[in-house]
Length: 490
Image 1 (cartoon, helix red, strand yellow):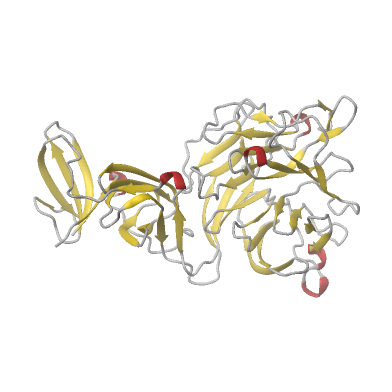
Image 2 (spheres, one colour; image 1 turned 60 degrees about the vertical axis):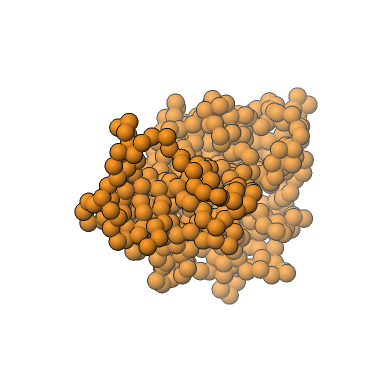
């Protein structure tokens, strides 16, 4: 019988697939390293146990049941020939059996307000989770986790001088080529840019000028530059990068501003490029807010203990600065849709179809209904986040519609899987990880060492010099004393 050889890391070689939903599963961190001929070492990270297939062109290779976390396999890509071939990983696990939101877990932090996930498949850091953390004066900045929420506990501050205030930094944004941090503290108000490839390097402050005690920065002639920034967004990268901020101090306060930072010198010492929304009716009266763009404008949240039409929890503003949605009048019979939005945390999923907002002890999720007119939200789920602190400062989606809720004062982060009947996700490998496979006339030796002996172990722990039927762990011992562990399915 033909053997299909899959070389796995020892840590993952005896795993089994998930029998119950852990998370909406997906693979991240996809990497390919050519070994020889048609053999590639394929690496990826799973956020939950899953059955996995490798897809190359019209060929599919079954990688079996794989563990949560890092997986590394050597796969012989039989029948595949070509240059710069795209490939993908499909992960599949059991899905939700009803419309109940599933809590996946909690991660403890000292004081966190910001959380973001890299949802760009072209990024080498796709799936990374970034958390703003304030442990102490010397450990304040960002912590990095993979999609399985595994990290080493390091806090990166980039010599930015973040203070022990929980608002410094307030939130993190994942740009196409950089991380950005907004600082909402008056004493340290600014926006900072960091290189995700090396967070030990200094973070770059975006704004210069003269800073007042309120956080407002001005030029020498008094022109306002920027103030305390509570939320930000960056579109584009490099010379095309455009920064958008929700600013507490600029003008009359709580203003949505635009800065074309791509070709500008750093620090920026000038007025904003544009004022997208300078609220004439003072609808946004709090400042504890999040901003997220869509195709026609911007969603803007704010903390409200009880929203009113004059001060709603959530609005939508067109690109022309016109308010076309007010959550305080968008509910049933023109009533409240959100109610209590303590403390303004809000996010939209990568597909642009779901909006989640904090609502004191709860989180509310809405479907974004596409229309040609004003924005429309339809309630989908309301669930308790279960954190000890009721203030939902920030929310993030990952690409598989898992939802992350960040609260400060020791509450930490809770994360949830939204209902998904088909718990399957295909991750495309970055273009720089494309495969090149030449036509084979034979399989060349890939190891100059001499094999001393080979032992096969089945899942019951029985050992043999020949393969067992089914799954085998293969222990190869070499003449130089080294060993190698692999897995085959007979």
